[in-house]
Length: 197
Picture 1 (cartoon, one colour):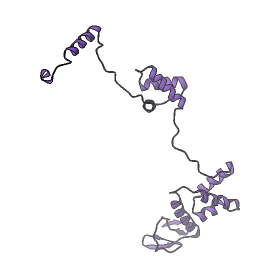
Picture 2 (spheres, rainbow, N blue to C red; picture 1 turned 90 degrees about the horizontal axis):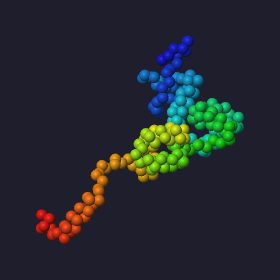
Picture 3 (cartoon, rainbow, N blue to C red; picture 1 turned 90 degrees about the vertical axis):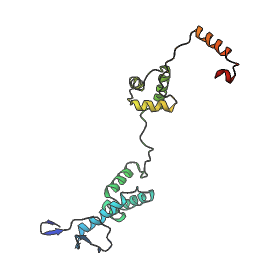
Picture 4 (cartoon, one colour; picture 1 turned 120 degrees about the vertical axis):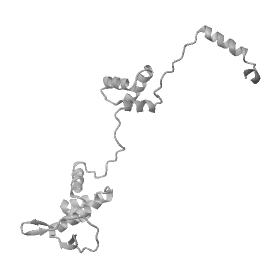
């Protein structure tokens, strides 16, 4: 219990206990009567907790705007529909700004690079096969002003089919090597399995 002046107000706690009568809350083991202002706040808070878990559908948005246009206050609409007043305020503000209350759907975070910049990365990587993702990132930054990470460059190149490969070290064959290999293969072309073992 909190004491404010001469009045004692019970601490408001959200609960789902059906045994508590309307206008009372359970504090410890006993029921405590709520003052009118505290009761309204308690009911409103309980509704807000439930309403925060989902988005408002278009029908409910229309009901909110309709009631506000009829002259009701935001607090009254909030208490009637069980929606937080801040949500109603934002909805009303958006309706007054552009006349639209439907949700703006986004498909996620916008891409850092444009298709042209992706093409630039692809062309640069194909021209200079030995350049690393960090080098390409620096080149893109100096050419277009767009700063991207090494990992982003790596993903863009993988998307077009360019993967990081280590060049295999091999000894280049001379004309003599080629001639000797060809002679050896012709000599052994008709060998039987017994001759190979």
